Image (cartoon, rainbow, N blue to C red):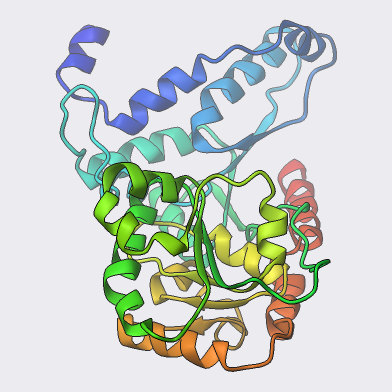
Length: 331
C-alpha cells in the first residue's frame, strides 16, 4: 500500500501522524556539522514526538563514521492515554483512535530509544510491558525555578488558587468545580481565583458560568509568581485528563497547602508522605469540606509539602537521578 493510501485509509493514529511531522522539524545546520565532526555519545530526547529528530542526529553521527549514539527518551506521561482518554480525534478519520492502536504506535516510537525515563511507577510498569527489551528508569517531574513562595506584600489576597490552560481536562475539571463544589461553599466568603486561559475559555464558550461566578476569574496574568505568592492554598480539582499534575508539584515547591482530588495525585500515589502533604478529597462534599477546614487554619507554609518536594521533586533530585541514569546508560 502506498504511503498516502495508508494515511488516507486511517491506518495511522493521530499520535503517529503528529510524531512523523514533528520528526521533520528543522535541525540547525551548524549543530549537524558539529555532530559530523565530533560525534555524539547520547541524545537526550524530551518527549516522544522528538524521536524523529533524535534519529536524524544519530544517523548524522553514524554517517560520519562515529558509533551510533545512545538515545534516552523522557516519555512525560503515557501519550496514548492523552489521545484516547482525552477523546482527541484523528485528523484523517475524524474519529478517536482505538486505545490499543495508540499503544501500538507509542511502542513503535519508544522502541527507537535505548532507554526510557518515566515520571511515575505506574508509567514504568506500563512501558515495561510495552517494551520489555528496553531499559526503563523512574525520575519524578520537578517544577519551574522562577516561582517563589515569598509574599512581599504581607497578608494573602487569595485563599484558593487554580492556574490552568484551556485544555479538555482542565475544562471538565473546572466545570465540575463550579457546578458541584462552589455551591457548597456559598456564604463562606472564600477568595477563590481561577487564573489563565481557562478563564478566557469560560468567558467565550460558557458565558453563563462565567457570569454566575464572575468574581473568581482572572484571565492571562503577566506575573504568575506574584499570583502564587499572594495565595494561601492551591486547588487541583482534577476530574478528567491523564498523567501527572505539575500544578501539584509547583504548589508543593512553594510551600502551598493543596486540596486535590484522588485523580490529581494518582501519578504520585506511591510517593511516601503524599497523603500528609496534600489534602486528598473524593467527591464535591469532601472537597468543599477540606477547603473550609483549611481556610479556618492559620496562614502558614505547608512544611510537609516543602519537605516532600525537597526529597522527591526538587530540581536537585531530578538532576541527581538523571546523572545516575546517564552513567548507567552510557555504561
